[in-house]
Length: 194
Image (cartoon, rainbow, N blue to C red; front, side, top):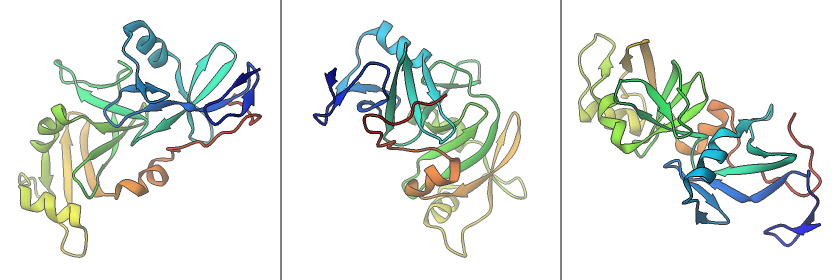
């Protein structure tokens, strides 16, 4: 038996939460300390999964460690060849939906899952925001969309895979919109994912 961060005891093989966190920028934290070692980061990335309830976890042998998400399950960036890649180094695949929150954070639902676009890749997407008639959208149009309301314009992302509507979605509503859990809140003895 070992002790969890909350002082509870747990047995090997039992699900665990409260140890592992993924920041909005795609950095791993163990007990709020940054994971610096490249092979440990690679291990976390390689074994990162989603269960049927939308909870993300790392499978470490028999141990399931649920991940607290600061924002979204993935952080996405545009690679040099123009493909969209997750912080796990996996290809994200086609964009299925796009949301802009009230602060200007862009989240995409991809074939891999929901991911927050990193700051370095925002310009790529900003250059591809269009009005319904194909005109480029300016900062005023984006600000109106972020504010919401009846005057918000209909905007789209014109991407290599096609046109995707750009929706306004408050950050707090993203988990329900894209079917994921930010804080699994798992306790000792909970059922492990399949």
